Length: 187
Image (cartoon, rainbow, N blue to C red; front, top):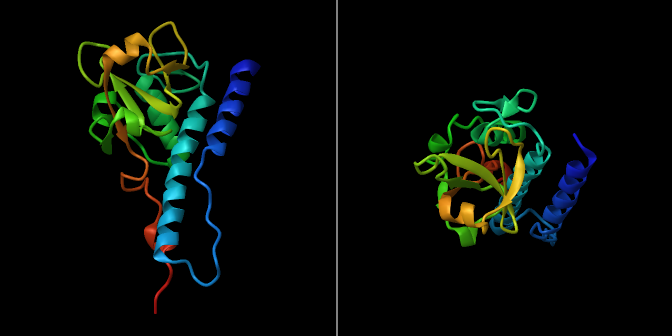
């Protein structure tokens, strides 16, 4: 991988890490239900950031229709699927349209790192997908002859073709922290 995209990924990862919600100090004793919920929420936030950060490491990978691995090339859904599989162990459906049916719908004002953003690029809604990075940016595998790259949601093309966004981390079973493990034991 060229040094420049790798450096950009590291800088972006550090920026994301500094934006994480602060941890609360505990005042002793066993954690309260509220503290357990905060811990679970922080784990979800961290997991979503991890997906975005992992995807940044794929900048520069060649686009390939139907591609599912960095070695052979990635298409848009292959990029998303690969990132989620590597970070969470969770296997997403193969197509962007199938992915658009998962998780919870979120508005553009609610977007967080790790959310999926969908576009109509082939004359049908949800025909293209990317991973939201924060700060109006998303990572995606755009089209033949290109590479995995970062784009801006506010760009005229992407704004015009936007179909919606979905949150998977913290919503889908298997992408949720184990609430029982975070909760205090009761006797």
